[in-house]
Image: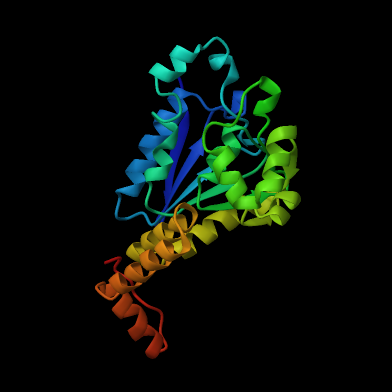
Length: 258
């Protein structure tokens, strides 16, 4: 590849992935999505990493798919290449918590990528929208499915049908994001949160993530049964025993992530 379309780093038990196409506001293309999937997977299987942070630049988390690349595609092109499914959905297979750190634009595919993460922390400059209708298109990386689950049908219809863009405060009120912080402290607060989460038992974190995701994808009774079995399974882990012993002994637990 002509450039490093993503950058990776580590901060203790936190893996950091930075989208790195600043000249095009981190527009998402095949090179970037392939590299992102590989980086996510590498951190996911690394036992020294507990949480993954995904960030962009100060101007844009990601301004959307790279329209210049897509403009001349045909139905056969996208169907035969399995567009989106082939590489954009790698994030769905990641078992560890993924935190999106969003400043600037998160539009179209960028908004959908953020919605695919488990926690979204937004700087006050962040803007979220699904403007595909302006191009005669529609969101295709899960936007029409995840957005209604996050903010409800009425507000999702408003955003999708009118191309309305939300600022960080509106996105927070709608329930689209987890929290809003000042841009100047966005990275610091994101990494502090990630480090705190990563200090907990890794097996318990992965089980929790599975349980919450199951709530979106099954009935209440099936979700509760899944949750109950995951709780029962914690009693087979040394981390759960350590956590309860530490609580009774009034000390910090020393999790071994087993």
